[in-house]
Length: 609
Image (cartoon, rainbow, N blue to C red; front, side):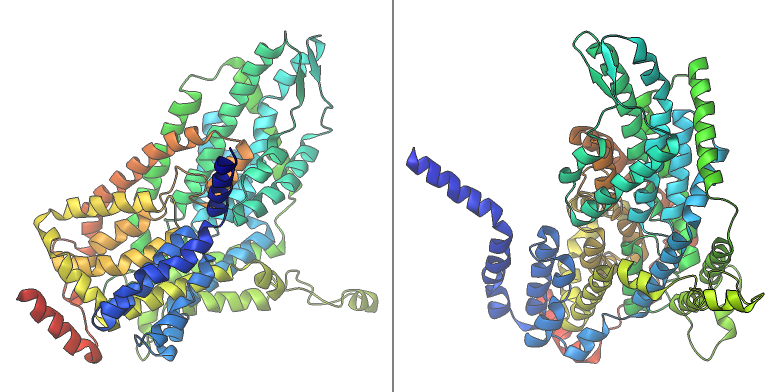
């Protein structure tokens, strides 16, 4: 028995320290690769494999792993330190930082909450129409601000609405001697405040990965305590409430993940794609803010509609609303209207934020829209990109005051109001900006540069020549299925950093437009619906609704299939109209730096012998 006990302790010790073993043993296991391999290609591959496994296992924090190129590429003789560090601050990174600052300004003004409640007022108040309203609102907001922030804002509203839908059922149990009703909440408003307060803990824990530790605090208190004879009746009521709550919460997570693909700044993989395309092909690929939206917004809307239908089928069915249901719908409508009225009239802060946001989107869209002359073409001497547009708007956020107090009626007001904060303050940016994701972008761009300079990407392309026997659609479908599976357990931005440079070389090998493979793969990086740990929105709603992981996996598996099939069909049909996938473009022929010409020539000679 003592031997078995010792064995269990050793296994427990190994399982609790497995990240340390991965961190230390992985470089030793892979050490023969740079030692026995020939040239920079092997040394670059050594670094990329280490980073990929560290990113997926989080043996090191993801941002820290992203800094490994600064250490390893110079020491292994792949790239100069200066060239590696330059990769961490490209135009795409500046565009991402600017987009995040605009999103923070929207959150600080509370404009996103006003938009959400206004949309909900226009849709019906039955569970299915409310769910559609929540999904459309979440989808739209996720196109512009963080998916996590959007989900965090919507969940307390959902909980308040669901509580109101089942409020009458709880009141009816007051006279039943078999049911003891707990203390009644003073008002819907206080309930919402309580939900928002308790949700702050869930949001923080979801960001750090601690989901289970806060789930009980959020939903654990029941308003109804049951005795044995009353258990069945209230259990049925609780089951119905849980089904609707899980359905609407899950719809928010799905809409957030799908909506993040709608614009070029909606989530990280799109910006990784933009940066890699600019690095490899310049501006000739035709991908910009307008063309991305033209390509992916139809798919975003289709996938959101299918998610709405699928979740209804799984959880609430398609029954028509009864008279009792219509009465509850009126109550819910009044609740949403009350919460909207609590916001008061639109403030100067919200109005100016809305104007600046619309201006930013317009500058992005019309910089080079392809179908008309873009405003950047009036500056032919230099190339103006999206980072310039968004940073101009960001400057205005820091300059314009939040309150229009440009004059004073008397000396007392002048003395009492010494400071007038701007629409966006630096302290808020410093506290809320996800600096780790910026390092993740930089690490991905450094990998892309090193693969090109070392000749690794060319070598990989030659190894994938056998895929040219498959139809292009089959290649694309296989890539998207693999991407959807991997992104369930790894960061979508990290997956894009690793995958997209390989796909660019694969496209050249099989002689298809690189965008034909890279666009659907980029969108698929955000299609993670099965696991709570796949995305922060999944983790947040899983904790808030105390969901069964099996239910989430069952619903998410079908959504993965729907989204992958939709994006592949749209790429071959609608995408061909926008980007011209019918022929291999001249701009896709790789431009190889002079210092790698000899290495690539040797590789080509070797592979043809």
